[in-house]
Image (tube, rainbow, N blue to C red; front, side, top):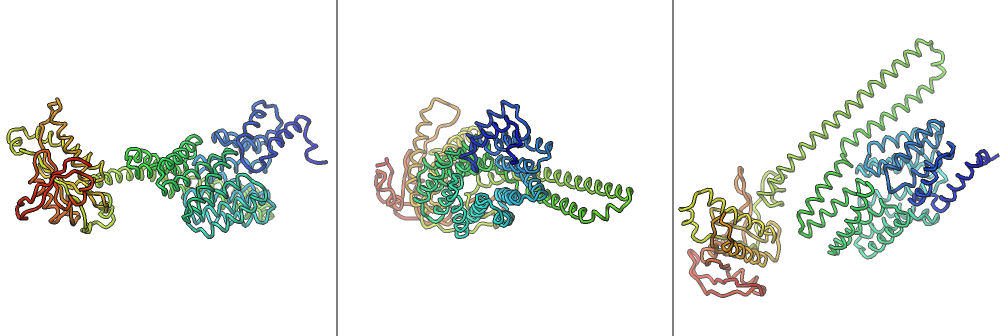
Length: 615
């Protein structure tokens, strides 16, 4: 008499419907299957045997609502315990662990996988052990604990090679290949993807074939084969869309965005990364939200959209901390794993001595029970203590991180980013020579007369009004403010990162400064004193570095700086006066008026030009 014949008529009908729904999606997760089975679930009235199978399939196939999938798993665990059904109890913990991982609750996921392994070992379920070890490896991969990920993948593969489950073996092989890919070990990655791909192709497994396509696309990208990489990733995404595997889609969209960044296709890069972010946010995939946020931050930084870049970077940091608070989460994960292993070993030891224990008196048996209770109590105290330590470290690290960010922001406000990093790493900054830098000086006309007749606070407020706008203009053109001295403003282009268009950008910035000063004179507001301004620009070699050990400042030196200052002092109100060096670099872009050779203090006669307008 077969197992199927034991069920009642109604149960047979329901099970037949479940099998019919699952016929073409035996291994792949499919939201459509979950939606169909949810109708049967909501109607109720099923016996426990049917309910177990129904809950298992609902927990497995529910992709759109992770919280709902976890609820299905919880019900499956409760009912399995009631029925004393180890197979479905294993499935409950295993499925719940996978959904918790997708939500970014890595500590809870590890706990469920350890429990699943214990149940599988007790019931000699080798396939269950293999896929549970693989699931633990997946969690350690997210934590970026490569050593443990490799170890658990190898353990899973060794067990699954002995089973008659080629698709589960293929999944483990593919996951190990993906881990090698993350660490740029492309040859090993290709080896495992090739083996897993054969299994997926033979079984015509949509999800497996899609992931093989996608992973090969990532390898092609790393090998510089962008066309093949783009084709593979797009095919993988389209295939995953048919089974609504949004986690994989979200991940491959980020890789697709990397290709578009390399090709300078910024709109496509933003589109791919944004779709990844939206999918991950909608589905609650914390690790993908973090990755997509970082990707968008990088793109907006490169396209000079600083506010958007900062916003997404903050989002990346927030989700990164919640997903992979690596050190402390790993300590707790290790503690849980070791604790479960210790308990398992204790059980084995007890079984080996069962005959001896049976001979003990009731009093000795009671002592053993008391000792075990005390041991469990002490271990519980240890777990609580470590958890509280974890909470304390987490709060302390948050405070330290806040202060660190504050000090970094202050340092970057004083020094260029490259210089600030060098100062933090080595405690000093080496002077650096730049062969071609454009230096600008501004000066307010008649400032001394204003200074003698205005209250100091009114004068400072007026200067701040102008210099704040100058700062914004200089930042717009990616130039570097050097310093202000009294009413003089100094900036430079072509450092700390060498560029070739610094003279052109500096003249554009100078014209914008002249326009702002002119407009300010015509405004009806009377909060600030209105000034006239003259500007001088020169191009040539300089030496740059940080001076002093207290209240340090980034500065530049050389004859180029002195000549730029002379260009300013020989300029006229509302004019941009440039040297011949600068003229040679911008003459094709701006209409310049030759002023002739003008006598310059300590320099003799120098050719000078007024910049009129862009050509």
